[in-house]
Image 1 (cartoon, rainbow, N blue to C red):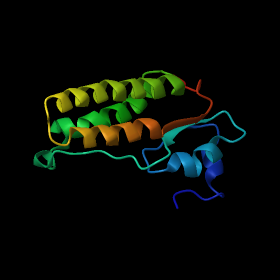
Image 2: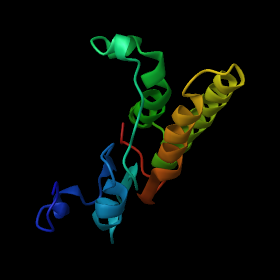
Image 3: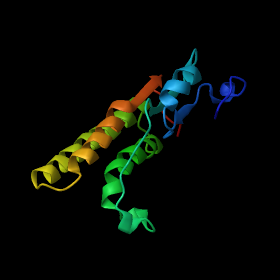
Length: 139
């Protein structure tokens, strides 16, 4: 277990983003309980597909990018002064845009497109925010 009741106090009044499977269910609410912090995470396992030919250089993997860029955008948005709520919504909007890209692949009869879509939809539905969505990093 990543957190125990003893050290959850360390995360009070903080902005937490966890791309950790099911952390949104396990710790998200508890971390921000009775304080001004915010937690963004996932209720279910965060998943993504990869193109195995880019396993040694994932930054070139256009398949993995469909899943990882929206997730990474949460942190980038927070660093750029957005609120937690804005960062969460920007990420979700990117996932919708990427789902539309995957639907175009399905129209072209791309093998596995519906499986890719299912995984991204699961990430979309799973992404959750707890606590003060107006929290932002102090600059």
